[in-house]
Length: 211
Image 1 (cartoon, rainbow, N blue to C red):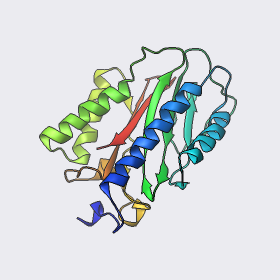
Image 2: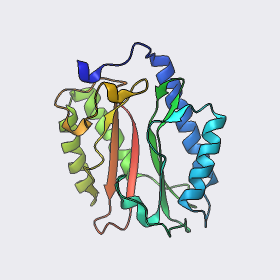
Image 3: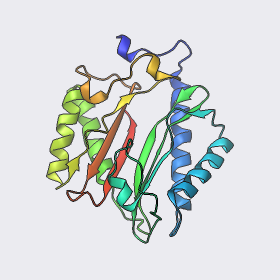
Image 4: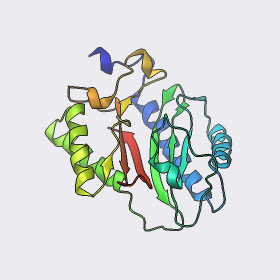
């Protein structure tokens, strides 16, 4: 299927190594977050740490959201006056390229709360189980995602609708969303994004990883 094609230089081992590096970078950055830091400050630190890991480029801009900005879709600009406060939600979304292979990882944290459970991560894993065991299409996965958000008293942000990934650049093969994909997604080809919102849009929860 052309939509799920990869380049001739794609290697599953390199693809997984890029993902592992991306998660390592994200978790290291989360530990550096502290009260008073701004999104721009953490972005600068991200650039520094990513280069130390062998970053070649970003295939999408670094996305860091604090507090009320966690409810915004990625095409919306952050409110600029926001700094991280005690027990604020914050999330990071990183799209680095390592060894010519793309990664895309995202996770939500709560400052000073090591016991925080991210509902978006819970929904992600429930959806991945359905994808694996029931063979759901991308379209059906996002229908289920809305149901699972509603069960938790939250809204699902369908503007964050998943996408292809591969050796760089995946856009040569497909630019559309997972939400609109009518077939069963193949493994190691698609990113499943989950962005849940409080109903008053006071905050949001994000998680993404590869299917």
